[in-house]
Length: 104
Image (tube, rainbow, N blue to C red; front, side):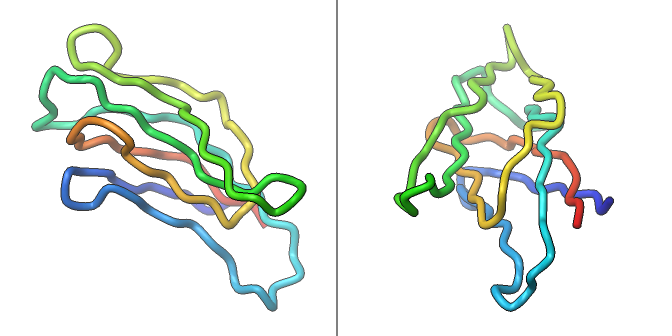
């Protein structure tokens, strides 16, 4: 397992995790925690996961709505995703930290 971490902010609103297309291995990305970090304002910060469905159409699903005063952290219990996947800050200015792991 490889640790994965990224931060979404007002200036860096998205992060894409992808693997080499020539790699035939089975890759799983598991998201464990999404949390606000130092400097976050008390506003709604919505994090979306953008992936592809079985018909290869892009779909965006909100996975977290964080607010400093009421929900600064969300545990996602190793929410499993298939790369390529993009995490996007759909609302708010962050910073939002995402942590998880990548298994091959």
